Amino acid sequence: MKCPYCQVEEDKVVDSRGSRNGKAIRRRRECLGCGRRYTTYEYVEMAPFIIVKSAGQREPYERQKILDGLKMACTKRPISAEAIEQMADNIENQLQTMADGEISSKQIGELAMRQLYQVDEVAYIRFASVYRKFKEVKEFLAEIKALQQTYG
Image 1 (cartoon, rainbow, N blue to C red):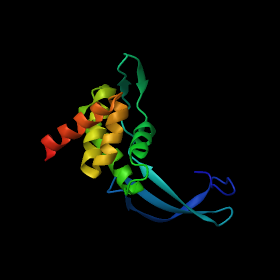
Image 2: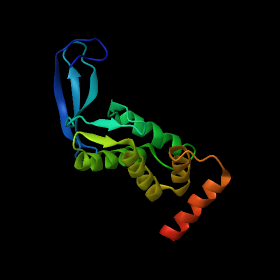
Image 3: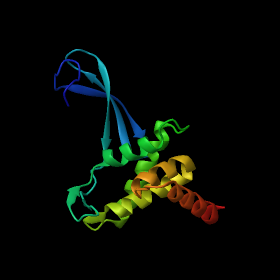
């Protein structure tokens, strides 16, 4: 691991503990070159899987795309960055149990909407409007009505 300050590759671990609900190990390191401290996170590497888009093209899974969609839906809503990260973690956990090498983008969108609904109904509607490509106000109203009927 290179020091982010002086690029020396030798350091020592000063502190190590579990982080992010046991999904990572947080390590506090001290550079043996410049003496400055920095933090690293160690994660279990997920088995890679392929996302099958609605038009049939395939691309590698990227967590950042899920995070970007969730963040966009949650813009100017009282939702913390931690809550958004937790939603992305929940989606990834479900994908790991579902994935058999390939998973459809439709399934990911549905998982994201389920997570958003549990956190914030407005963020859910925002995401659904983009994901389902709403073109008219009546589509928003129909989705809201369906929400009310389903979740009361």
